[in-house]
Length: 140
Image 1 (spheres, one colour):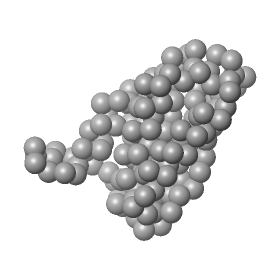
Image 2: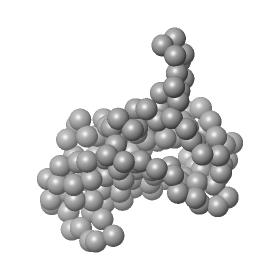
Image 3: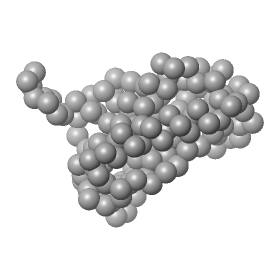
């Protein structure tokens, strides 16, 4: 692992926005990171969608983790609900249900791990190795 961001958020309607902003600030605060703007946008979108799902699943707080490795990033959102997320099949006029479709489109893989009493929903996104080439990375 080359870099890690971890922050807890309340399960509120503005949690996705707060998490997006916090991730952006965290990435920007590390001068040795060289994450391209389009990769930052993808990470922000995945964080936002996973946090939105967690807020819908539980009234408890949630934890956002972002790890950068050589060649990939891992986003993880931990919440207190054991209910598994499902990829929606929204109709063309529905305003909700596309979050995991977006995550699946951007991620090389995604999944759910049990974290009793809840779960961790995660996504792995490819990033150029040069994003972390100036970092002292260690094997996870």
